Image (tube, rainbow, N blue to C red; front, side, top):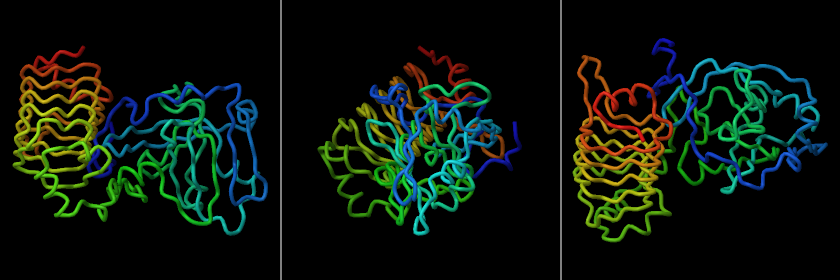
Amino acid sequence: MKNDSHLPPGQTETRKFPVVGERLPPATLDLVTWQLSITGSVTQPLHFSIAEFMALPQQDFTMDIHCVTSWSLFGQTFTGVPLRTILSKAQPDSDASFIRFIAYSDRKHDTSLPLEYALENCWLVHSINGDALTPAHGAPLRVVTQGKYFYKSLKWVREIQLLMADKLGYWEANSAYHNEADPWLEQRYDHSLKTSAAEVAALKAATDFSGYQDQVILSANLANWRPQSLDLRGVQLKACNFRNANLENIDFRGANLTFGDFGRANCRNVDFTNADLEGADFSGADLTNATIVDAALSATKFFRDTKSGKRIAAKVTGLTLKNPHGLLESQADFLRENNVKFV
């Protein structure tokens, strides 16, 4: 393990490579017809089959991965082709200032970077540590970008566009992720998009939450809140403060609660099935008889240790945990030590 001084703020080291985001490409991705296209502000648009790409000179490149959900994986060696090599063949126009990566994805994922930064820090890769990437991690080809949160490293890349002006990517436009994505500055969310006090007040007063499935509530203070309905399926309450909230019996199935702070919250009998809980902190929460099934748990905390050595832990008696995705090693050990069975 590396010393904590090598960790960007708010990150936890892991020795595994959690799957984050979509877990599989669309069924339409077929290696027979697969193609990588270079388009936009270039002199020579290009198209590569997988065989043509693999015929290019391949190199190894080692970098650390810092996921926005707050895990870090050090020293991963990727094999592929530097972006600079590909673009030298396409010859970007003098007015090209940004680059956009587009995925084979049902949700049409994409992301962008300043061209100057991408030329120095982006690779197109097909293998990690000597093994081919799995489909869950972006096979047959993905982008890796050094020095940014990993949502700037697009899976299943199909097109690279050169742009004169920037275009926000999928996560940046739909999930309020920060467009700069610098882990050392902890640029996870664009807090200029923080939900207004009036919108938070409307949320707290709501009796029907169906409208919040399509509206992102960011960084709301929901401390001591008791929702007036138990049906909060599919809501998007990101980086919110739920400390001391009374959430007992709430139906959070399919909700996005990433980076929620649930300290001392009453989460008894809560149903988190299919919820996105990445980066959420349940330290000190009461999860008695809660249900967490098929949930995204990358860097989710069920305990944390303070600098003074005190452990702040969730109550997990009767917790049902099935098919957890991305749970980090120390958190899994804690749950097992407290008799939570993994199914």
